Image (cartoon, rainbow, N blue to C red; front, side, top):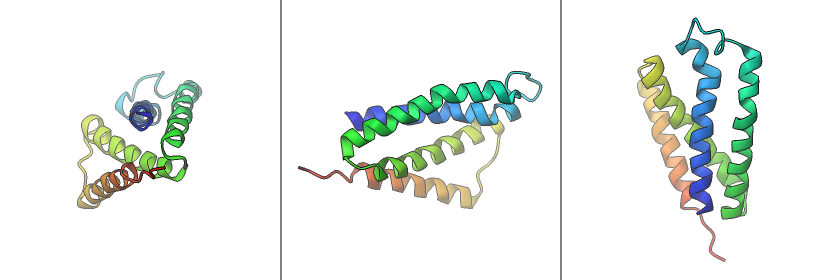
Length: 116
């Protein structure tokens, strides 16, 4: 159960982080999304979510490397989806292959459970 909570936190944190970093390109005339100081404050809850996602993953696996790989994969997938949906950036073949590799990394890590 820890693993799924961890992945859910990763998804939410990556969605917020996408808006934090790339909202300036979606809302170009906004004084909020273009304000670096305000966006830095948004980093506080995002960092808190990443912290707890890592803690929960460690509770599940007993190692930190698994979460590093899962976090990379989830971040890549979320970024790809959000870039396509909001910024209308069409993935190239290289991008599509990278997203498939990210999915493979997540699946490898999720099934890497050591039974005690």
